[in-house]
Image (cartoon, rainbow, N blue to C red; front, side, top):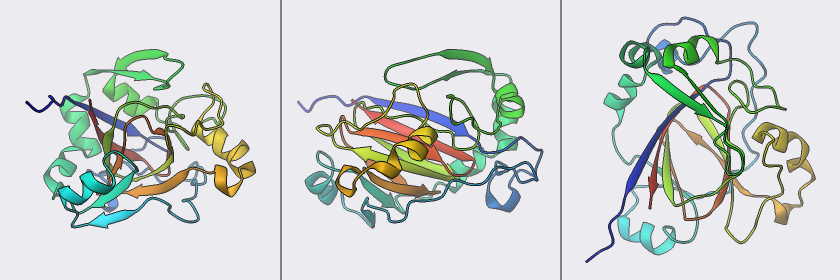
Length: 230
């Protein structure tokens, strides 16, 4: 009998700027992109994406070349327009504004938790990121960590990923942000010591294999959904 596969779903929203009330699908971004004079400078995409991208990808090719060996970006897997509409700022606040959500450092080595209503998180806690502290806002993301294999799809925004294979532990401080790592450690890395990296666009899905180190950095307000396999 084939081993049972358990799926774990994680839905997360990060933002770059102070909250503002926009229409439900302003500029096709679901109302999540906040524009204004206080918006911080955007974090740049990488100079060159080093993760392969594929469209019209077969399951057999995925299993043979990527499932157990390296990350890959998949395009055009499905039409998610209905789900995307449900994830607009207005729709999510209307449906789940009173629900309590749990915020955490999402870090392999430290795990601070804060519980609060989803509407309070969206309207009061989405502010520019301080590079010295874990939180929400400009340059927010998750520091390096690893777990089982998984898929991560960007619904709105852009999300920059950094990935190392299991045998190559990255140089990082577990309680410092990805933005701090990018500013202070990344520039000094030799080409051979740099991670695989790429910015995942809305509608794209990144697959990462088991125990691969990875860190993320949001370049825009980002809404994404992750599926973990175990």
